[in-house]
Length: 107
Image (cartoon, rainbow, N blue to C red; front, top):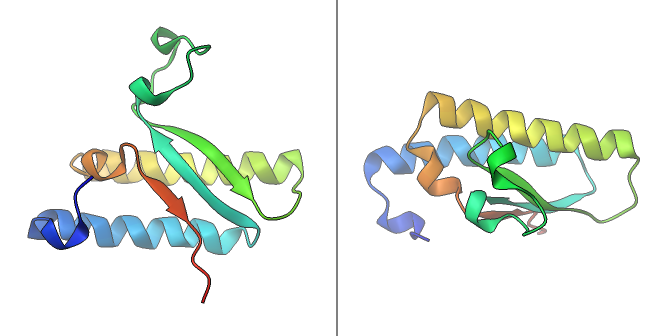
């Protein structure tokens, strides 16, 4: 994956927008620890990729405490909506998202 310092000015702007959207998702779910985004090549073997229509998929959605199925589904939905929005607005974001893991940072 590219280092942020090596991004073109255009991709640096996309990265900043992407980060803001993802941290908003973390802000909505205090127990969300992290998640990964994979393309079709990174999905498990038991999933038939021909049945999928999206470019990226949320994997390894993790929480620091137990959450209800509703909370899990809502976090998943917000992440997928944020990803779909940014990719539809900025197709070059796909390059920054593929294979990426987002994790909450603690200070």
